[in-house]
Amino acid sequence: MASALVVALIATAAPASAAPTPAAPSTVAPAAGAAAEPDRQPTAVGYGGAVSTVDPTATAVGLEVLRRGGNAVDAAVASAATLGVTEPFSAGIGGGGFFLYYDARRRAVHSIDGRESAPAATTATHFIDPATGAPYDFAEARVSGLSVGVPGTLATWRDAARRWGTRPLSSLLRPAIGVADGGFVVDAMFRAHVAENLTEFGQFSSTRDLYLPGGAPPEVGSVHRNPDLAATYRQIARRGVGEFYRGPIGGDVVAAVNRPPLAAERPHWPHLIRPGAITAADLAGYRVRRPAPTRSDYRGLDVYGMAPPSSGGVAVGEALNILERGKLRGLPRAQALHRYLEAGALAFADRNRHIGDGASRRTVRRLVSDRYAADRACLIDPARALPKPVGPGDPNARPGGCASARPAGSPTEGQSTTHLTTADRWGNVVAYTLTIEQTGGSGIVVPGRGFLLNNELTDFNFTGTQGDAADPNLPGPRKRPRSSMAPTIVADRGRPILALGTPGGSTIITTVLQVLVSRLDLGMDLPAALAAPRVTQRNTAVAPAEAEFLATPEATALTALGHRFELRPEIGAVAAVELWRDGRMLAAAEPARRGGGAAAVVRPR
Ligand code: GLY
Image (cartoon, rainbow, N blue to C red; front, top):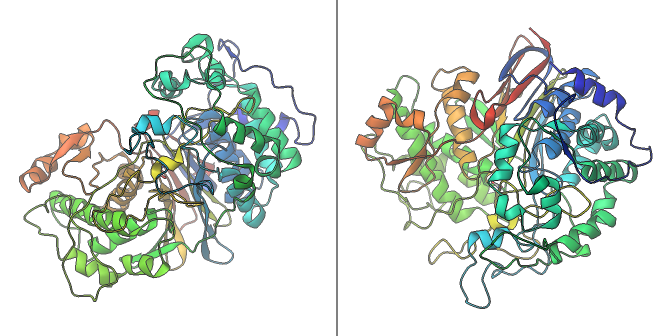
């Protein structure tokens, strides 16, 4: 249920055409009198539209947009803009993402690639220290202007709203402006995200001023306001997205990247803070792309995902095709999980070798073909885990091989990002994953603008990872770093039945896969599939797993097959919507991970 707070915000936020509120310094005041957080419930069933996000305020905003007659695209954009305020360490207009949309009228799935791109001056040695010839330490690369890619999030919102929405972007930004101006109550997760970035955020005057009031993370229960971001959104609402890509906001982004706003007194940081080289021309030249989504059939269903530069659609599709070679339903749970783990490793080996920005459509098509899956599936031995890492296959070779090349490296990425899923009464569905890469991105808040810049370029491999073979994910001019983001829509005879996605770096792929397998094969309902303990095998010798998983009899049985596990406190934060034949929708979010997500429907059952 949308809270009174959100209804009030939508009704009373200054219209986009009103004069901007002067950007007062951000404040963190005691919570007395502050609006309470909207309901946080992990599941909701009913009619008329559904929203699932990691955050109750963002969910309530999306729900209110649906209630007022907006469609799934309107709700997704309004929720995402709100996440830019309440979840600023995971996503915002300083980052990028992938938007997957089912258009009910045309019965077609479309996508927007709003991934950040490298500046035109980028070379393959972008992350090699010229002084030593060695790659930068990850932290040094991350907290710098060097890691910042040209943001794509605003261009995504504009494209989605124009092509498929029913409201102008200016009106979809309005609730988020209200939240940024009016403030929201800081929860434990928000504080924890600041606390884990204490040293990084302390390097920059703008970031410190916004997120370290009095030099410390904001207290749980205090109210966080971001008037600079409210003013930025308002300026965009009034004058358009050109303010960002060709105007003064973009000018401030270029300045912050080229001359990071260092604080006068900084906590010890063992690295140089290096400038980047984004230019005004890089911003002006940014365009979203509209690739055809990947499609693979799985046990009679169509599974749609993101094409490169995300590896999400390809890897999830390939792994499903591998699993489809045999029945999972009815197998002992440990044997089903064994196949899930092996399929993940095989798909990751291929993703690492073959997928990067510019991967050909032919390669993508072959990687998600049943024919190729047959060659990969035959490597799986039910009685013994494959030694990891496994080698990639060759999707362009003649079929019938059952062979793989020499193993190569398995790069992994960070844990940040966010995902939201929406559906409306007309049957349109959105699965949208967006990010600024690491939790806290590059650590640089654009001075006076209230948003963090991404460190997405660290999703490139700093040096080749594929031995003698070419690495498809080295930096290059205007190239987009490979992603693992995997917004996914599953359709049955052309009608969507499930949409989902998750944050979690490269674990995104296996989390989406595990939820799909749990729901479609292992007989769990959607809330149970989300709650089930997670394990992620991304072609590494040891697979991270949650504590609850390690305590299961299946973990013991899998260890006997040769799998090795290590503890990872938490994997992913799924937000999903299921669409039932009787017209009802089930919105599902995490019951516990990341502090619990928020699911809602317009008219509860
Ligand atoms: N930055 C996380 C991803 O793109 O997968």
